[in-house]
Image (tube, rainbow, N blue to C red; front, top):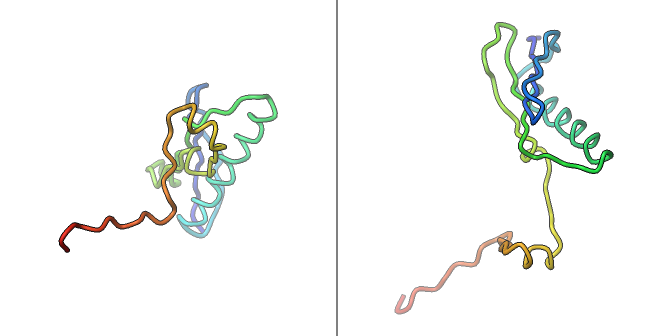
Length: 104
């Protein structure tokens, strides 16, 4: 088991995790960071706001960076089609169609 620290960086600044958690590997730390980001965002939504610009910076027991999970990476955001049109967003197809080349 390795010790991982989950530092939260958001609009309120950097909140350092001084305690940390023992986990088997970096993949388990990534899963923990994703769950933590989702929990923070759920609390924000209950207050009527959502800031996707934050992240959780994972460091090992020596304080060395291991990985970063942005809040935006932790969730899939879907907008209704009318909101996409109003905002000028273009929905990307799940499987982009290949364009045929003339003469090919």
